[in-house]
Image (cartoon, rainbow, N blue to C red):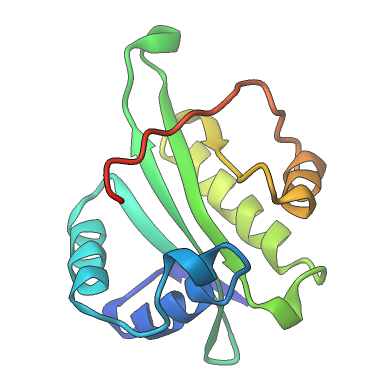
Length: 149
């Protein structure tokens, strides 16, 4: 399995992973459109953002986005924010997600981050157990304000 930053040719597979999810079915579309194209171009052009994919046998089987955030808090500590973690359904429970998360944590550490953080929907009990097994702690209560309807 290879972990690497995504390229434009990976976008259809990433979008398919996002849409093939119990929550993603209502939030995402399975077809690449202008909104996905613009978002990928913005991520790709920003050195503080990366879309990461796991490739196995030439197929994209998992993905996530990581954003590196500078901050004044914690004495100027940089942190990494991980979002939109997806593993192809038939490969869940086989270590793909754990290997991908370990890889991205190591990458964040190498970039000088002192903290990796993420949010996970309250409905995702399996995801909560997964992140806890990796050492993540539910130390804060997350909140969101949706600006679009």
